[in-house]
Image (cartoon, rainbow over all chains, first blue to last red):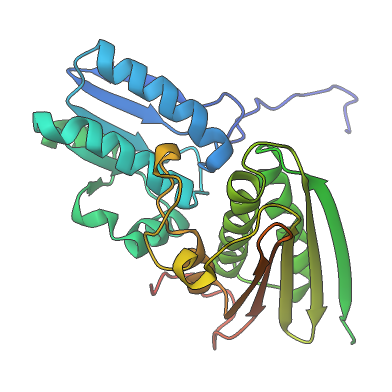
Length: 128
Length: 152
């Protein structure tokens, strides 16, 4: 601190603001800002299901730009939402997937039933 | 330099401790100079083991979970132990996609991930007494250190 003035950098750490939800044309965008483990999965599942049921959601997009950790509980969350929307022709997409999470999804075989996009925007364009 | 080291961590089977437990083990393993990928592997494996204790070991009460970490040479050993209900058929429990709690959206991938991300996995369990999961991983197997490109 040379000038003696304090400068507080904006706090942009992952997990700070929690997971957020956005609805865009029957697409639910889940922006994960928490590590997707069993602890956080409980809340995300509840919140997402409420939104899916009340807003006639067809597609669900998981945006991983705010997190770099997921374990098998995350697989459960994705599978569970898939089962909810598949019978109305809905799809699940993931976007901004980091290398560690990509590996988990690949190992689980989930890419057979979900689609991966670089960005949320391209996912939205492709999911109609 | 001799980097032999040991640690013990004891905590309650509350789900908010999952993140705490994997972070502690990752920090403990840091002296082995692991790659980002190796650290992610360790965190995932520990998270799976601890979640199993919380959900399956102590299904309807809060119990104690103990994690022991050992470092010897380039090898990390992690033991995750609970004194919960135990597993009747360990081989069955370790089958991919096998789960006793589909109601909780458990994917049945926990043990598969532990096996995939660590080099060795042993499970000792006695019904009514508890379960011990022992995992080993050798750090620095890759030829080029810092090579984090995914090979899958």
